[in-house]
Length: 212
Image 1 (spheres, rainbow, N blue to C red):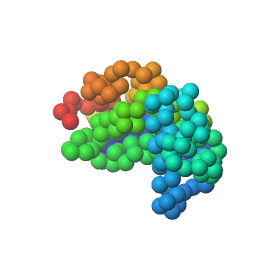
Image 2 (cartoon, rainbow, N blue to C red):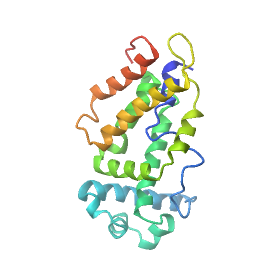
Image 3 (cartoon, rainbow, N blue to C red):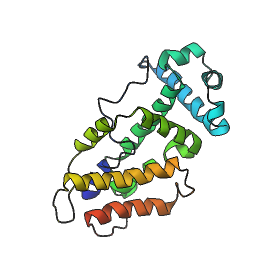
């Protein structure tokens, strides 16, 4: 496994999901019809947030936009905060899918960073609200334990990073990406930010500059 791939495993934007991640759904959809209903709810929520902001974000508006009943929403989600958390976790799962291998010959670390920066299909308002909701329920100790279970990362000399080095590397990149979202930085989707985050991780490991 390459250093770029191992580095990618450290870059989970909310920290690795663990078995201690709080449940946000009353009922887990298992049939295709139920899953489609939940997807419609999450998509409607994102559209409302993006067009009207958090002031327009309520279950009545979500139900109307999704074409479902209020009862259908509360069947799966206890409140609108749980909808935001589910949106965040759905995007995290999509980002995780990008980690195993770089797309189109891309290095895995760049693939992971790009997937995060381009998450939520560019919906900045919905994204900020979802990230804030996820952070509000996250247990810092559980997140730290998730990072601790990730594969070891080697520096350019083949030496495993110490716990302190792993902490600094993962939180530096993780923190910069999260801050760009929460601060609504105009360069969030820029190539320059992506390049600088990739450079940060590789430079810390002492890796030579790569073109991918």
